[in-house]
Image 1 (cartoon, rainbow over the protein chains, first blue to last red):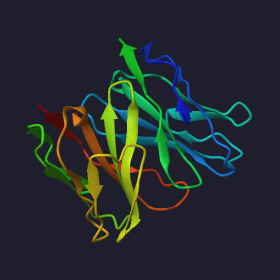
Image 2: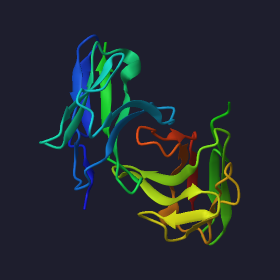
Image 3: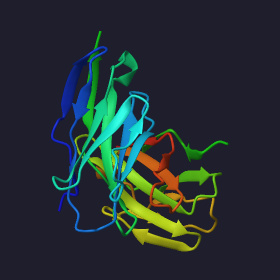
Length: 113
Length: 113
């Protein structure tokens, strides 16, 4: 069964605008973690942000925030004030109780000047 | 610190050849994993290790072997290369903490002809 679903293959955003990248997950584990990674065209995977299933507040890291809605099983990434350097593939991932990571298929974000 | 070092960065193999992708980390991470990335399929787990001497299969283990004789090294062996193994391979490592995400290597682009 698919654990992580990213339904937006590609997204466009105007520079300086905010954008939301969707992620839904499926797990019956009471304890899990949600992560977002960025993959620029150079190919490396860069960790952006983490949300624990028991965290009461949404995680934030600079211009990145994670909109965590536990009941809906969603963990959307919000990028504020988009920059040209934000153009990349973005992957949502989940760590299960068994400590395995499951990745979504990714969303390609293009920032338009 | 070098982080996670993967070699080679690029490789072309003929069908039936064998080879080893090298991975080394200098962060004393207990957990290490190998993923393959294919277009439209995200990252899929091949094999993983939770410590020296311990390995286990992931989602797509067929055609690959691993070993973990030291904490630092986690090589991936292709036993008899097939065109279906053409992919980008990532090695990653992390601490076992719940909030710890993976640190990824820079990837190996493998083509099997």
